[in-house]
Amino acid sequence: MTASRLIFGFCLLLCAEVFAQQPEELRKSIYFNGGSFDIDEFQVEMLSDWLDSIPNLLDKYQIQLISHTDPIGGKEYNQWLSQMRSQEVFQLLLDKDIPEQSISIKDWGLENPVYTNQTYRGMRLNRRVDVILHPLVY
Image (tube, rainbow, N blue to C red):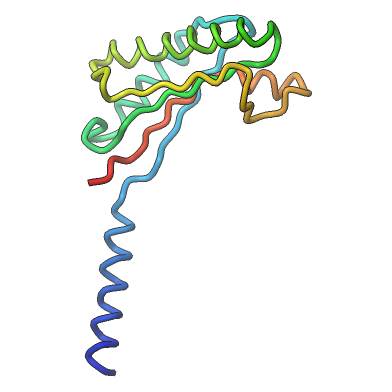
C-alpha cells in the first residue's frame, strides 16, 4: 500500500469519527385539542423530562418551536392560535431557565401542514408545536 493510500484511508476514518460524534437533530411534539392552546400536565412533565435527559442542552443545541393548526376556523384565527400555542411552549422553556435567545419560533398556522387535513387523525396530528433541537455547529 502506498503512503498516499494510507493517508487517504486514515483521513476517511478520521472524518467518519468526527461526523459520528456530531449531535443529531432531536424533536418532541406537544399536541393540543381543537381550538385550544392549553397544555395538559402530562405533556408538560414529558417535555420537562425530555429536556432534562439531554446533557449540556444549551451547549449543543439551538431550540426552534414550529407551530401548526388544523384548518378549522380560517386563516387569521389559526395564525393567532398557532402563535398562542408556541407562546405557551416558549413560556415552559423560559420557566426551565432556557434563555430567550436560545429559542426561535415559526408559526405556520394552517399553512404547510405535515399531515393531511382530509382526515380527523391528520387534523389531530396537525394541532401541535414541534420542539426541535438543532445541533450547534462550531
